Amino acid sequence: MKNDYYEIAYNNLLYLQATLGLPFYNDIVVLAQQVAEKMLKSVVERVSAESIPLMHSHNLRALYDSVRVQYKEPALDRGALSMLKDYYFDAKYPGENFVTVTKEECAECLETMYQVIEYVHAVRRELNLECYELVKQFLAD
Image 1: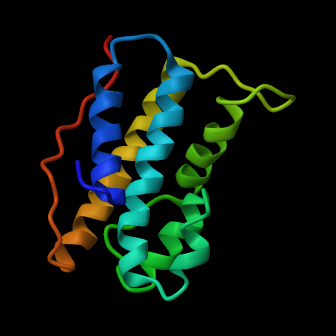
Image 2: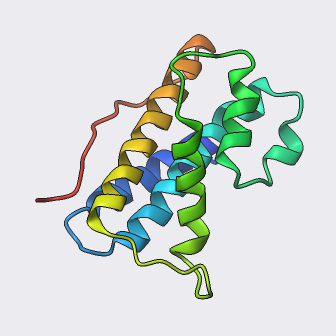
């Protein structure tokens, strides 16, 4: 594994996919957010003049918006990005905002994560950067 955002995100994705048969939906959505965040950061650092502050952000919408200035397609649902970001904190830490993630919510988060990966791959191809094969896997029925 290389020491960069894309490699680490892809490694996280493979780990996430290995856990999809387990009913730990909170952990899966937290990892889905991390995959999406690191994937976006893998292109933000290459295309955004504002990359330094963004590299310390967990805001998926802000990361996406900084890339979307130059790479508009395929468009992502900003509301879904916001939801995935919120799960990162609300499903991970105790407190008044803590949630127990349902299987259906987890499935939505996985779909958003895969859409982010497809977007990042489109940008990376435009930048002539390597993209690994994406094999989508979802929760077991």
